Length: 125
Image (cartoon, rainbow, N blue to C red; front, side, top):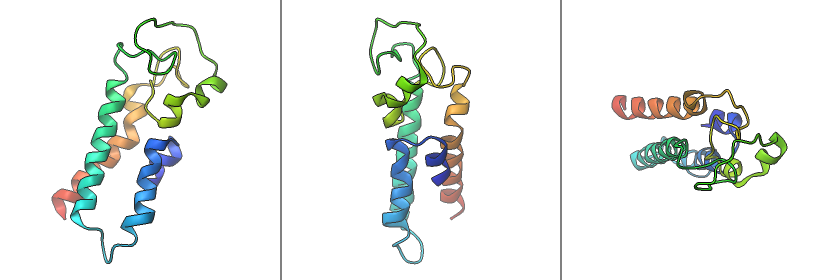
């Protein structure tokens, strides 16, 4: 969970390390099942939102605009300060992305690995 925050620092990903710090560590000896269930639902919702925002219905410039899409390149200095990058739900490829060659799988790699680990934990715990 900390790796997700380090690879993609945003408001969406800061919830995971904070949940560890303020809840999971305080539970003795291990967190309750409801914590793992909440965490799994949270990660699934974030993955779903990240996939939905990749649809052509949503433009990347301006942030979260519908229609009137432009294919003009947006400088990285502007992208980092936009609300969609601060929140963490943004397009992974296209003219208004930090790395225009990135793919959806590359953008969701850490989230998908965390989801697989959470499901593994649920099955074998």
